[in-house]
Image (cartoon, rainbow, N blue to C red):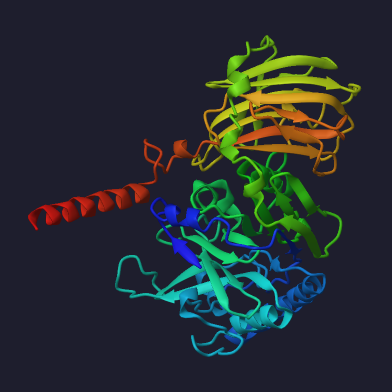
Length: 520
């Protein structure tokens, strides 16, 4: 395992080991898990009761792991929070936690379960990997003792982390990742720095992060850009938010935009809009699952390329604003109006005709759309929208979005509200925008929350266009941009404060070293 908090100097060595594997493809598996939740309580349960609940969930995961291995899978990803759920305080989560060591200790929990204290969950997961000869990623809680007299140490004397572990087919712990971007998780602590965790196999180089991490530069983009991973392992407990952030929609778009494989395993909890797992590649989804009708889990398997980057141009090969900045904007309609997607204020303009060319702008972002419907349904309204700015209630992440979407009703005030069904098909569409970022993720979502693999593509000049005939009934066609350097917690230069600190220290050390050489 390689873990780092500052990738710039390490990236040189990553380049040397870019082709770490010898196999051209492998079978991957993800499991969407209907987690068995604990009873709600304001007081901690006993460690025995906590272990009993986790073993009930592992019993279900065990069946999925065995089934995946029997079908030839080399690696399986299980979801975030799959062993115990998510509604905890710092006190009530504690009985579920184990001390998870650094993988450099060279440990096979299945063979030496007491080496690091009471670790029955780690021992069982290790044995599942070993007995089935498969890589297993699982998510559990890590506890790390600290001096409670120090200002950063929590009152109970432990740091508590949302943690991913990976065991290889021998049962050895080969990777550990502490989630950095927590989302309403008061039971866990934020690590001091984002961890950049990778491990190598004969079928590619893998990176790891969790759920909300995918929306940020570190660790998500850095693992691809500087560590050149082939495949991301992505456990999540993702609540779907239409029209832009359903799990299958955004995760498949991220894989395409970044040019890597993404193995995404989600929790299945219909009452919380939690479903949507998949095996995604730079060319689209291999297999995905979205089910709001049943309460059952689902195992997904697919063969994927071990080194997708070796056969594709890197994501920077797409100039996302090339087309949009060179054409003359289409006439802006007088009927441009303001609407909201969640808390974000979009500028919208309606698609009045069966075919046309439209432009809508917001500040520096102009979105251009050329389209032709097969037939305009009288009871359906579509709009073109533009948004650029800090997103949502938190106002931390800077988004740039161009979207063509179906409104919930013919009343324009409903444009941007969640809608799940559509009838209108498009014979042609071409969407582009004057993006200020090179990180843009192409989304196409069809009626009843389906993807559209093989029916659209991104051209090198930044246009998202349909291909292979008319589309299915469309809910939304979007270009979702993340301008990371404009996030509110970044410095004005676009470099994170921790990275600046490391760079200054490096420069200082170089100056001292040069002075010593001169003195000698």
